[in-house]
Length: 97
Image: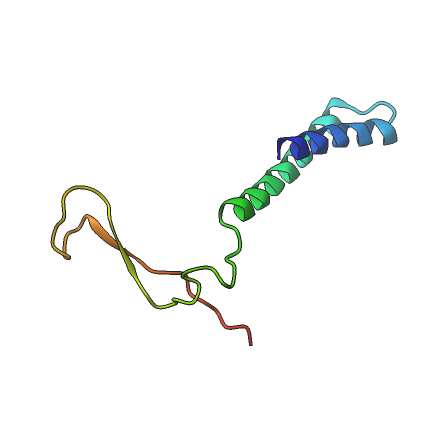
């Protein structure tokens, strides 16, 4: 990811210097801002797919669409109506018709 961002920013400056003989400071800064924006978007997309990924079809829990899981946040066991207990719902599975 770092290499891709470096390539985008360095490549933008190299492209400007190739096509414009004497680029002004404003043109260089605008190119760097655009390249950093593109690098940020690329980093977001790469990290999103790396961290969250796409669930595999045969993965455990993929077929369990309606089950709920209760997670205890902290402390000793307590009754089900405890405000420190939360229920996590699995993501909604959309049909592909």
